[in-house]
Length: 335
Image 1 (tube, helix red, strand yellow):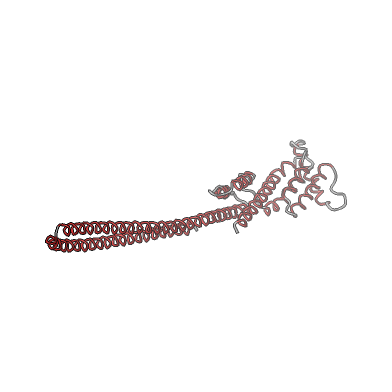
Image 2 (cartoon, rainbow, N blue to C red):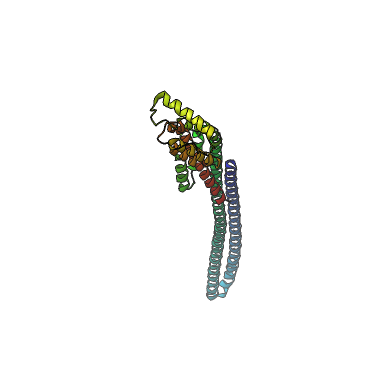
């Protein structure tokens, strides 16, 4: 998509360049036509002036001939002839001035019309260019948001895949953080994702299936240590008696006695609650039950690791759920 945007930008630049070249060619053509029109007008004016000059020359010859004839008729006739010649010259000058003024007005009007036409063309080009730029900006923004959404979705998918394998996912979490911080994103989105990523454990956590497999071993160890006081008091004999008692409770469990009382009964109840919670997919509830049931006994150390891993997995699952929901909402907002 980035390459498509670059190609669109290149095509847009080429289109603007072609329009500018076409406008320059049209302007050059209009300028050449105006020059030609001015040359024709000047040539016409020159021809007119030449014709008028020829007419003046003819008139002067006629005046000279008439003056020669009128000389014989008297001074009054000569004076009238001179006045007629002067009037003719004055009229000729006036006509030439009027013709020159008309040509100047026509040339000025042609220049004004050409400038107005060029201004109209330039305004149209500016409007089209502004419309194209606005459309490109809108499409570019939408494309950038779509790319950001896709990058974020891929990063969250990679994080989910890595977390589902139970291994480390620091690299994938960093990819999610980078995708959320991409330019053009909403600051609130970045803050949400950053807050969610901070809840993730720094290292990988066992999968739910792996925790379910480990739970049986943890339960067995908890039963064996349920009657041993916290801190390891009682020595080897206490551990041996606790182990034998745990074996007895396991063999007798379900026989109606409930497995005894005190700490042992608490661990047994906690194990039952944890098993039910695990079956329902409630990792935090299972961890809370085991931790509370083993509290105050040596079994607390046996369940500590599993409890921590279960809570870490619960945080991971919750964080992934939030991230998936957020990316889905971002993608939906672009539809």
